[in-house]
Image (tube, rainbow, N blue to C red; front, top):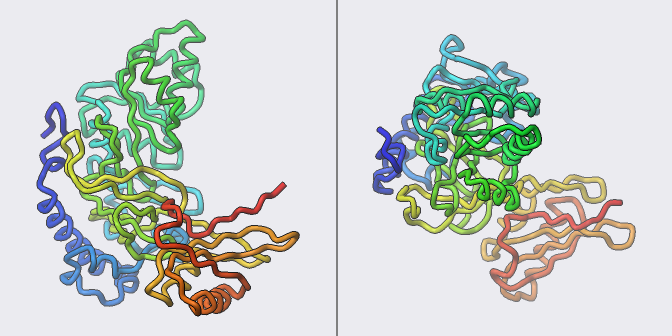
Length: 413
């Protein structure tokens, strides 16, 4: 039941009650996945779902990565054996780059976008112009189904043909826009150039790219409230901005972890790491899906808008910092493996630059001075990467908190 301020009571519930409900749903989902999918039975390796009762237990489960999804789907089409719903129960099937296919079941608001639209100011009866693609990828359907959940009609504009879309805005008078961050500006500019009245749009939700300050200013100057969200084609809407403009509130029925890039190990709150998501989804029960995106948790506490779920900073870059050094791939997981051999050290960052015409690696490690530690870490770096590098010990908490594990500083002409 919606109110003027919140989509439903779940958004303002006690955080402990939410966590208990999420963990109970997680245990049920893992049980369903094991019972309904041989692929999940193999992937989860005999895990007892009843023992997955908290985040520490969740963190011991394996991470599922995009590359793994593609490999599974290539060998076991169409979804790698990871769905537990019969194909006859699906409404649509989509494709994403890299040979990954996503199912959409016949449940209302399957992608969980209604909340983010409501937070952006969309209300029942508003006509929504949907400028996400309806071709192959799920973005168009993601927001159409969310708008329908709110009781909103949708103009499926899709992408391109801005002149026709500007004319449609002038005639149909939509109240809300959804699309990429800068595309509403394209339509507004086109309408102005054509002498059309495109002033009906009063709010919007954008995602799929950086929402740059200059574009935000354009919308503010025109009196349009536009908010951003963060989601993926694999799991749907993960977090969304609200009227508080204080980070992105994690969506209900979504479990988010922030882990050290290249690993599945959660980082302390406030530290930048990779976003790992477990959506509560009875049809496609992905467990610990690594998005490849960087973010960080904001401090605990309710948002000024009254929503009580945890918040993240938003998208802060990509976690996959794999690079080539002297013709060989070096992965963040290898840096993590070197550090894991020495639990007393802090964060590490592998800096790759040039020494004349040759590649050079320097592993900077947060640690108190130890006469033999640098030498031991140097040997470990060589053993793990099969490349020679040097180790530099730096003071604790001195490396930037930006999630970078590999910092490639080489300049290519």
